[in-house]
Image (cartoon, rainbow, N blue to C red):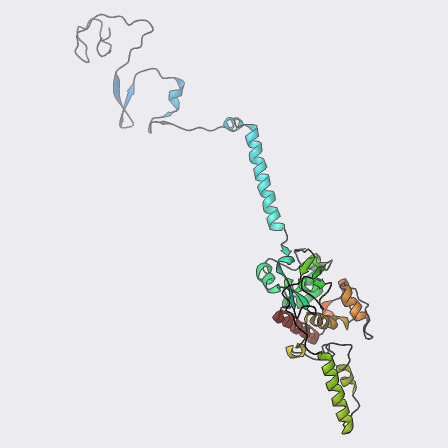
Length: 353
């Protein structure tokens, strides 16, 4: 018989509950009723554990009795329950990220030269002059560490590649020309055009972005030009020559003097003797450009710049026979390379480059 108070089972002949001492009344357990068993204490592994004497379903065997929580379980079935569309989206995102990283790491720097272009005018209204310059120092500061020489440049330049930067190589392939640079008036428009060497990308890992455009002349003051310098120089030379003849000081020039006075050269000795910046005093951007390329012209190099090519074609000493793409910098002597560098430095100081 069961105790009606605490539910403990007692002997059928007992009159009092062996657990709580309450009087026992003969009661039959109702059908489908649940009797809550008494919680007893047993010893397991030298520890006292309280448990209920009840029937447990299969789920109770997964319980972690030491910590009072169910142990987590994983299976491939849980992954299979993830929606296929979500898995496809995650996969596509990973692929896109990989592609973006590859593009960033493998892409070539793009230099927009128009951002570094400056057109300046000087002189008077009706007789003004214009010049164009590129801020190569700013380009070097921003892109110098990002640019590298390609294999072709390393092969052709050889040991000289250590004395130059990729930006220096770009300079040799970039040129800007004006359709008119003198006798300018206010409100007049001049056109500037870019000339970029076709094989530049084979030497330097970069892309060049340019756009030809127009520049409107303004702010030229009203006034007259100073006396013609060339006429004054010519007059001085004639006077000096007449004075020498009068005193019998005329001499026959030797070969070196003839070369130095040769009007076909801007810098007659740039191929054989070191020059200084003093030799370039009074040179404008156009003369510096010609003087620099005069060094190459002596070796028979042709030019992609039509204006330069026409200029040297007019000289008796010039024999253009080497295409620009086939010309080797190693053909220049050490003196010629140093003289070229002197001209480039002068152009930078004057803002011509």
